[in-house]
Length: 393
Ligand code: ADP
Ligand code: MG
Image 1 (tube, rainbow, N blue to C red):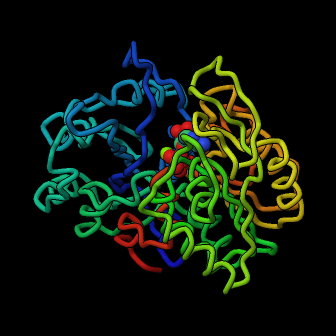
Image 2: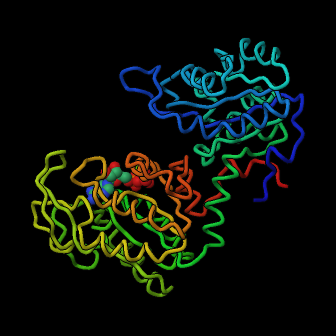
Image 3: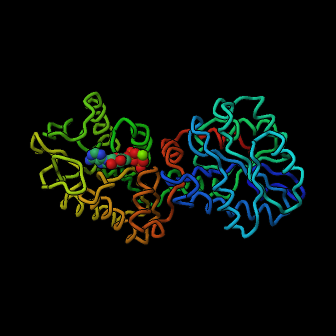
């Protein structure tokens, strides 16, 4: 990586503004309860390094959408527990409370600012707001991989006014994913699923340049099935993407990239926990049914491909994995990745990461990205503004 990291600068005695991704899920019935604190625990290595090296650490993040004006107070409480010390919480971002609490910090202390998105200037990447935020500190550290694909004030704008480096989480995310994309051990296999072809076009196009094989599952497989003349019943399909699907198939052929599609599908007439399911060939689905998961033959075939891979990037569930009747394909593919201990296995994408986590297989993967949208854009080969804004080595 060509960007400076926290280890490349002297932080002792300096006020360091750290942008984290503390956009954690909250209990819908009790917004003071965090239901998954992984994003907080993933930020700890950077926070601890800075504290141990005598920095005055000022943490900031967004949580939720600008219109929600959700407070970050539950994160301050969780952080206090995790760090085993009180983390002072400023009830504003660039106001009096933030300024006085920041001024009171001693070397090695840490505090958290209120949700940066209580200001509309945050998402607008307003220069005056970025400058005010910068005035709280002497160094800026971006460790918010999950929002690195957004050019907002606290993720990018502020870097114009301070020395700007990345933290360990960003370093880890782009290190592992960048290495897999640029320097993969082969065979390099991509597994793509999820609902729509349209949201994965960039991913497919970039990966076609790099991988040896692509496995397609999930809802988007049916647009491909229809594009080659299949009958797909009520399955998800983007009719305006049929030409594109055929183009992708041609391109893969020209590049020698092998493409695998689900031969059979788990079908149902309704999407529910107690749906009655039946298995059909993915190109012969009856008119009143919908393909909602890959079938047993597909699972076997995909497993064979995964078994021999040395690098795997997976984005998008193999079916409607939120519901038990349609989760088997995703679970079995996740297990196949877990069993291939010789391979580097990377999960990118919000729903894919959530599925792997839910099935208890996260620990068995080389890397589960903390950034849904950010990891997708990274895999698409896009420049992430929150990383581009940092100082080069
Ligand atoms: P990610 O967040 O990992 O990038 P996506 O957002 O692209 O993944 O896709 C996840 C969604 O796709 C899930 O909500 C899942 O239910 C849906 N999905 C997957 N397969 C199907 C299918 N066959 N029919 C309908 N929806 C599907
Ligand atoms: Mg998603």
